[in-house]
Amino acid sequence: MSSQTSSQAVPPPPSRSLVQRAPDFLVWGGVIAMLVVAFGPVEMRRLPMLFTNSENMRQFGQELIKPDFGLWKLYVSQMWLTVQIALWGTVLAVILAIPFGLACARNVSPAWLQQPMRLLMNLLRSVPDLVIGMLFIVAVGLGPFAGVMALALNTGGVLAKLFSEAVESIDRGPVEGVRATGATPLQEVVWGVIPQVAPLWSSYALYRFESNSRSATVLGLIGAGGIGQTLFESLNSFAYAQVSAIAIVIVVAVTLIDLLSQTIRARLL
Picture (cartoon, rainbow, N blue to C red):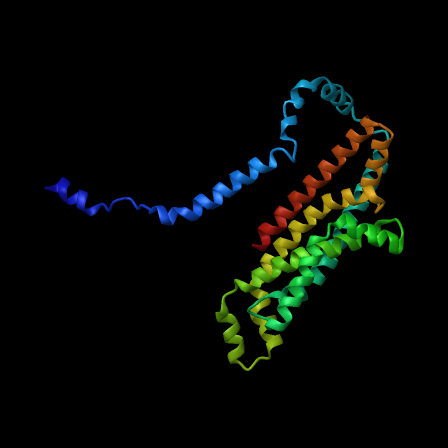
């Protein structure tokens, strides 16, 4: 009797019909189909060459495991310049993203403003920072300023999207409470919206600063200053021992930035 009662108390496991599973089959089937179609264009058939040409990799690796830190002061100073480029680029991006993110949020700005701003932010995100950097190099010449502006525009577009999504997910209660006091729309944003999203915005900005520290290194390859330019020169001269030392400096710097960012985020969130 007790076993019959317990069996009746436990509901049967949920099941999904074929119609309910059809979207999942379509999504995963589409992903698998895309992988199969892309197998040839991305030359995945070359995968065995990683093992058949291992001798070439071994010779290259032997040179990389002997880093030359003879110019370590130069490497450290150039890495510090790269961090400064990333810092300024991120700060300018945040200044750009705050008003643009609010303008893109559906629950804050009117529809006639949202769509043009979203198109503009899509444009900034779509153009690679290397291309933007080249445009600024043509405009202002070689140097760190071109890298700062490239990071500011590209990161501004990314942060504006993230900021707008954070605004769209806020609790409407505080906003309505501020509105009940007779506040203006701007005061609603300042006192009802910003306090809710500020920790998340700060976390997004810190993450982009970490990312920009790496992106600023790549921008150095096109003459935007920093350690990337030194790395490119060492690669062109086949000085792989110097390349290894520069890579170690970059890894150490990015690791320290990541640890600092985690500490700040932990206090904010």
